[in-house]
Image 1 (cartoon, rainbow, N blue to C red):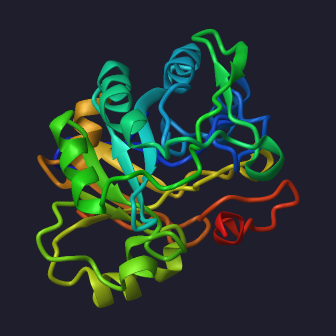
Image 2: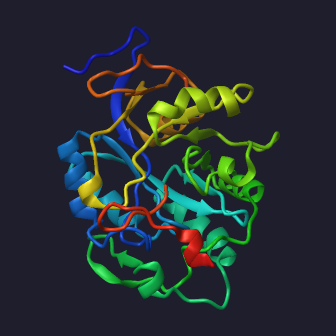
Length: 285
């Protein structure tokens, strides 16, 4: 029997940052059925797909998730004009697709097409997970919007905005050195759990922002057991989004060490196939 807290909250494991084969820096094995099967094996109950500057494959992953009774949260990882990565999570796939059509596509770099030999292929799937071609847009390049504009745009489509991997490159910290006052983020992400308290003290002390931690996985062989748990009144997307941004009774706990999970509290970039890191800034140059 699943245990509940005294507040009536139930724990659900979550990984809210991963990439499909639509992200040029991800492996082509990141296809819906394989990824969902792996997550089921690892005990992940809630997940989000967050491809770079694209949400096309979310419908296929949502369909695959239903087969394993996993909760899917439509997501995207945007890159601002300052080269800051920003996660957007939306209440349903329709909202995400409208956001991509109205905001993301017009903001993509004009006059350039993706070169798969340099930036990797960008594979699209239909709702059944079948490959239907590639996106030839420059999804790996920055959008024309500032970080402030992207946060506003996400909110205008009922989404929530989470600053990506503060402890890595292409984060708001690596690019600006601080979180600007007045930037209406809903939460922040820190990949390495051992760095959470240091970063919280240094950059988040006066913000009140929740912290989440996910895998940012680009390769199916590198998928791991979940380190984050969302404690919810019921398992649905709205409760998850409210929990992340600190609204309502939901709480977040993050496993700091193997076999140990902290009590609930409101609380990188691409990889080569061998697991080594790609330096996308060198590619941009």
